[in-house]
Length: 327
Length: 245
Image (cartoon, rainbow over all chains, first blue to last red; front, side):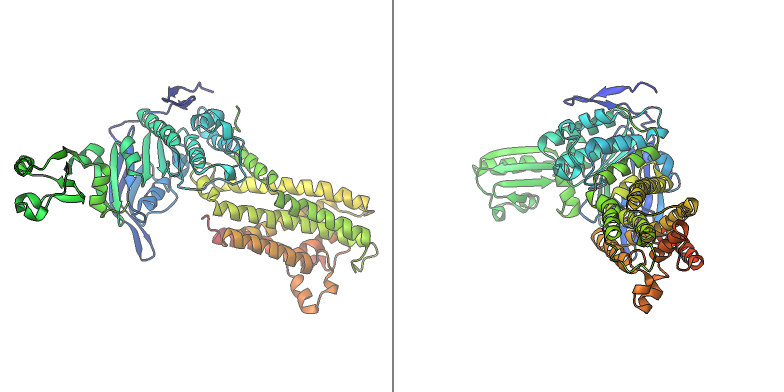
């Protein structure tokens, strides 16, 4: 058995197994005009996007947007109605066994028998990948890594929601994956648990693993993702790096000491202001000179400004704008 | 910490752990057959029609035990594994369906060995005379019957929701226990019920086991054919209809 090279994870007592590296310039996941239909319902409608090794790609979208169906096709759990998917250069349906050895999967929920104990399940999953690897993931190290050392002999049904999520993540790591699909990994997890999971995900990406993160939690995604794919109604609305997606919608945030009477303002100013709350306004894609004109107008009327900030839109702003506000 | 070095061994170990933690299944597969054997073996209340009621009871209780392990226990466990998405999660590992099925089969076989190791000595203690037993024929009957019942259990488990599956498996167990020719003789059943019961795998297995263990079967040739048909049909239907989610 080869020795297991390891990478330190900040704030975590154990080590993450090191993972084999692949070319970071070539996409390791290619979804090309993928469609999934359930009878007459088109759940996924000719979507295309890519993900790369060493990056966290967040797949975002409201419920029923087509995220899970798309990911399940990538995992080999579901067949495409049309289109193509390549994962690490493999067809998830035809090459499922080969892909399974290189892939980690965290389901949104379940997947574990309620009476099973964490240490036993992790040992089982390490064994399932035993014959396809030059070395095994160490069950105890995985348990320690996800912070379940004290609860390793507690049955699954007695674990908290966050502990169940962390156990599910440990199972996804048992394959020592080159690509990992994480469906809502921080759902129901407390603050410390989120930090641990975030550290592990970032460490995986830094070590060359392709991380596909499906989540509703936009602030979590914004903290760790490199790329974003936003789904809605079965289509991909936007795909790109996090910065590109946010830069595409530069915003201005204006907060005043008293509410503005927008009806009294000139149309060339008032027409751009969006009232998010009393005394709290935003402007999207402001044209050149607008901010200066607004500042002069406010100054002339003696309206004090609490905050005037320009910058990239948050991921949540972009998401709400694209999907109509439903996350 | 060492891990099992093959997917099959890892899965088998997990199956056995789940079984060991499941008290209801142990009750069904071990304790109830032993209680029935001891109760009816010591009270002689069954109208068996046999000179020695243990000659009727022992093969019948062994058939009941085989049904409980290969149909009810396997079916209930598999139904809940579908419900808990255990099968879905295993579907994205290198385990594969053949090794998953093999682990299930070996688990059932190991359970049946334990059942026989307990039931046969209990029957001998209760004065069952095993001098005429053809053990190889009995093992063949157990093997064939197991396949038939496992196919039936997986067919039900593969179609119904976990809770409905649980009720259906237990209901079928009770029905076959009473009307399946294992504990109550066919002659004691109403004629139409007896006619149906003789075509069921429970009655057929009990009959061929009586043929193998005591040489006093009702209609051994027909029962072997009936059991053979169930053995071919149920796994094929289960494989064709099983839904993994």
